[in-house]
Length: 226
Image (cartoon, rainbow, N blue to C red; front, side, top):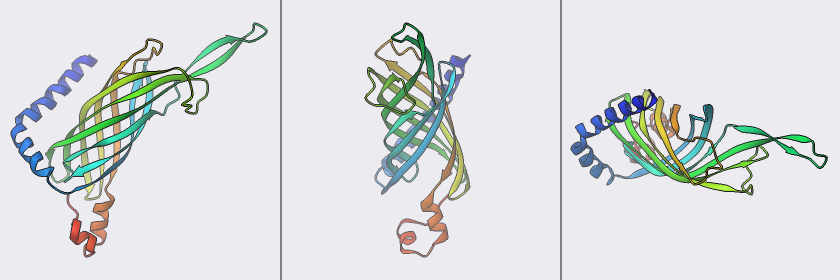
């Protein structure tokens, strides 16, 4: 059932893109020539690792062209405390319980292309890929000195939509699928999973243009736009 769901998502996304592919490429050529602004985001995505709900936090920074094309890089890490309890014998031979925490971190490149846009609605195709590390450690704070660590590769395509309440405020939702390849069977967790994110969107520059329509900055870079 899950595989069927993702086939439908990918089919619909592909159909939208193919329908307007020529227009999309022509538009991107014009957009990439425009002046870029900074794309800075804090993210929190939810997915499943071994059937447990897990939060992945991230920071993204890059360039945005007319709010229709964004690309850049970032870093993400596992926020949730996922652990196993193991028992290790002490010097007296008694079994002592120890909690083993799973940790995950990766750097990535991302791109996000808008292919449908109205005054309030926007639909885009976000893609990110990156390399990272996963490991176990015996405390809940990230310890980069923990050994050993295992490499993994991540690829995450999806579809994103948002609704603008005002020119500077909106709500959004991402539905993606995270594919992972890891190089060691010692990390038994399955990282491949659907990912979901509900977003609260705030555009500080658009609010500034609305509040100060006669400023020199607004005259140069504004006005606020839907």
